Image 1 (cartoon, rainbow, N blue to C red):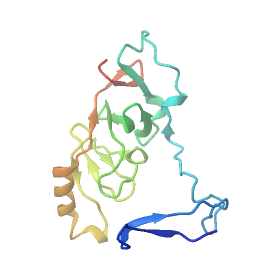
Image 2: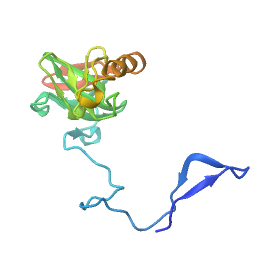
Image 3: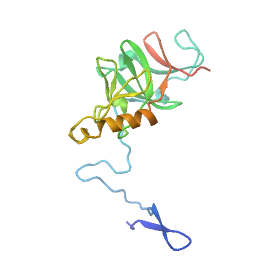
Image 4: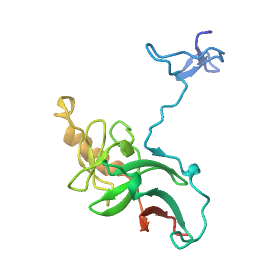
Length: 183
């Protein structure tokens, strides 16, 4: 395998952060695993939208609705990650009401669809237990753990101001949650 090369600018100086990897037929492997470094990690709870039947108007499905997931597929965590026309969403039930929010935690970008819905109705990140209000997308509790004791409130303040989760309208039709695209 050939080593990576660093791009240099027209003036001979290097462009910081730009690295070109030369093509190689050999795929590196992670130590101790059979999974290749280029193979994407997939979650068993990810529900690809392409596996669903094509969108048609029916008694349980109207124009402007995109099927997300059946309530029965949510399991004990109350949330799953679903690929949709608007991107990957964390879809679930909070306090008996369906919700859909952007799937990426604002702290370290974990999939919120792999988290869980708590008794208070908040969506909890699986990595550092940040909590989100699914009705507003706001972080209501920052990352937890010894590393974050001193910066917890700073992280929460900045992520709330700059990057709340995007929320999406969801309707429940006969036990199946649908994204309301409004068209």
